[in-house]
Amino acid sequence: MITSEQYFQAKPHTPEHSSAAFTLLEKVNELIEWARIGGFEGPTCPNTGTQISGSKGGAGDGGFRLSTSTTGAQGSKHKLAHAVDVYDPGDVLDRILSDDDLARFGLYREAPEATLGWCHLQDIAPGSGHRTFIP
Image (cartoon, rainbow, N blue to C red; front, top):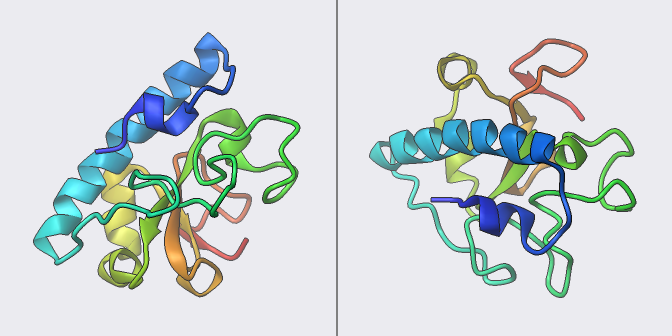
Protein backbone atom coordinates (compact mmCIF):
# COMPACT_ATOMS: atom_id res chain seq x y z
CA MET A 1 0.00 0.00 0.00
CA ILE A 2 1.28 3.44 -0.93
CA THR A 3 0.54 6.04 1.74
CA SER A 4 0.26 9.79 1.34
CA GLU A 5 3.28 10.17 3.64
CA GLN A 6 5.32 8.03 1.25
CA TYR A 7 3.95 9.90 -1.74
CA PHE A 8 4.71 13.41 -0.46
CA GLN A 9 7.72 12.61 1.75
CA ALA A 10 8.45 15.88 3.52
CA LYS A 11 7.71 18.04 0.47
CA PRO A 12 5.46 21.05 1.01
CA HIS A 13 2.07 20.69 -0.65
CA THR A 14 -1.33 22.32 -0.67
CA PRO A 15 -4.68 20.97 0.54
CA GLU A 16 -5.58 20.58 -3.15
CA HIS A 17 -2.52 18.35 -3.61
CA SER A 18 -3.56 16.30 -0.58
CA SER A 19 -7.05 15.82 -1.97
CA ALA A 20 -5.77 14.88 -5.43
CA ALA A 21 -3.26 12.42 -3.98
CA PHE A 22 -5.90 10.80 -1.78
CA THR A 23 -8.06 10.07 -4.83
CA LEU A 24 -5.09 8.93 -6.94
CA LEU A 25 -3.65 6.62 -4.29
CA GLU A 26 -7.04 5.10 -3.54
CA LYS A 27 -7.30 4.05 -7.21
CA VAL A 28 -3.66 2.93 -7.45
CA ASN A 29 -3.82 0.89 -4.25
CA GLU A 30 -7.00 -0.83 -5.43
CA LEU A 31 -5.31 -1.63 -8.74
CA ILE A 32 -2.20 -3.00 -6.98
CA GLU A 33 -4.36 -5.21 -4.76
CA TRP A 34 -6.23 -6.51 -7.83
CA ALA A 35 -2.94 -7.09 -9.70
CA ARG A 36 -1.68 -9.38 -6.91
CA ILE A 37 -4.15 -11.98 -8.22
CA GLY A 38 -2.33 -11.82 -11.57
CA GLY A 39 1.08 -12.35 -10.00
CA PHE A 40 2.25 -8.81 -9.21
CA GLU A 41 3.94 -8.94 -5.82
CA GLY A 42 4.11 -5.18 -5.24
CA PRO A 43 7.83 -5.14 -4.50
CA THR A 44 9.59 -2.45 -2.52
CA CYS A 45 12.00 -0.16 -4.37
CA PRO A 46 15.43 -0.44 -2.75
CA ASN A 47 16.07 3.25 -3.40
CA THR A 48 12.89 4.60 -1.78
CA GLY A 49 11.93 1.84 0.66
CA THR A 50 8.36 2.00 -0.71
CA GLN A 51 6.38 0.75 -3.71
CA ILE A 52 7.12 4.09 -5.37
CA SER A 53 9.96 3.96 -7.88
CA GLY A 54 12.80 6.44 -7.50
CA SER A 55 16.46 6.90 -8.25
CA LYS A 56 19.22 6.26 -5.76
CA GLY A 57 19.87 9.44 -3.85
CA GLY A 58 16.95 11.07 -5.70
CA ALA A 59 14.30 13.21 -4.18
CA GLY A 60 11.56 10.61 -4.45
CA ASP A 61 11.04 11.46 -8.08
CA GLY A 62 8.38 8.75 -8.63
CA GLY A 63 5.91 10.37 -6.23
CA PHE A 64 4.94 14.00 -5.77
CA ARG A 65 7.22 16.51 -7.47
CA LEU A 66 7.59 20.15 -6.61
CA SER A 67 6.88 22.65 -9.38
CA THR A 68 10.63 23.34 -9.48
CA SER A 69 11.54 19.68 -10.09
CA THR A 70 13.64 18.99 -13.17
CA THR A 71 12.64 15.30 -13.23
CA GLY A 72 10.30 14.40 -16.09
CA ALA A 73 8.26 16.67 -18.32
CA GLN A 74 7.55 20.27 -17.42
CA GLY A 75 3.79 19.59 -17.33
CA SER A 76 4.17 16.36 -15.37
CA LYS A 77 1.03 15.19 -13.56
CA HIS A 78 3.34 14.32 -10.63
CA LYS A 79 3.51 18.07 -9.92
CA LEU A 80 -0.27 18.18 -9.52
CA ALA A 81 -0.41 15.06 -7.30
CA HIS A 82 -2.18 13.16 -10.07
CA ALA A 83 0.58 10.65 -10.97
CA VAL A 84 2.80 8.04 -9.35
CA ASP A 85 5.48 5.66 -10.62
CA VAL A 86 4.91 2.20 -9.16
CA TYR A 87 8.07 0.14 -8.78
CA ASP A 88 7.82 -2.72 -11.29
CA PRO A 89 11.32 -4.17 -11.83
CA GLY A 90 10.17 -7.15 -13.91
CA ASP A 91 7.48 -5.14 -15.73
CA VAL A 92 4.95 -7.63 -14.35
CA LEU A 93 2.35 -4.97 -13.60
CA ASP A 94 2.65 -3.55 -17.10
CA ARG A 95 2.18 -7.03 -18.60
CA ILE A 96 -0.92 -7.72 -16.48
CA LEU A 97 -2.69 -4.45 -17.25
CA SER A 98 -4.96 -3.87 -20.21
CA ASP A 99 -6.72 -0.66 -21.17
CA ASP A 100 -9.98 -2.20 -19.91
CA ASP A 101 -8.35 -2.77 -16.51
CA LEU A 102 -7.10 0.81 -16.43
CA ALA A 103 -10.60 2.07 -17.26
CA ARG A 104 -12.07 -0.04 -14.45
CA PHE A 105 -9.81 1.76 -11.96
CA GLY A 106 -10.06 5.21 -13.58
CA LEU A 107 -6.37 5.31 -14.46
CA TYR A 108 -4.06 5.94 -17.41
CA ARG A 109 -0.46 4.80 -17.93
CA GLU A 110 2.56 5.66 -19.96
CA ALA A 111 3.42 3.01 -22.55
CA PRO A 112 5.33 0.10 -20.96
CA GLU A 113 8.22 0.40 -23.43
CA ALA A 114 8.84 3.94 -22.10
CA THR A 115 8.80 2.90 -18.42
CA LEU A 116 11.05 -0.12 -18.03
CA GLY A 117 11.23 -0.99 -14.34
CA TRP A 118 8.28 1.11 -13.24
CA CYS A 119 4.66 1.71 -14.18
CA HIS A 120 3.58 5.34 -14.48
CA LEU A 121 -0.06 5.71 -13.44
CA GLN A 122 -2.13 8.88 -13.46
CA ASP A 123 -5.78 9.71 -12.97
CA ILE A 124 -6.01 12.54 -15.50
CA ALA A 125 -6.45 11.68 -19.16
CA PRO A 126 -3.54 12.58 -21.42
CA GLY A 127 -4.16 14.78 -24.46
CA SER A 128 -4.75 11.72 -26.63
CA GLY A 129 -7.39 10.36 -24.25
CA HIS A 130 -5.86 6.88 -24.59
CA ARG A 131 -5.60 4.72 -21.47
CA THR A 132 -2.07 3.70 -22.50
CA PHE A 133 -0.19 6.60 -24.04
CA ILE A 134 3.26 7.48 -25.35
CA PRO A 135 4.80 10.21 -23.20
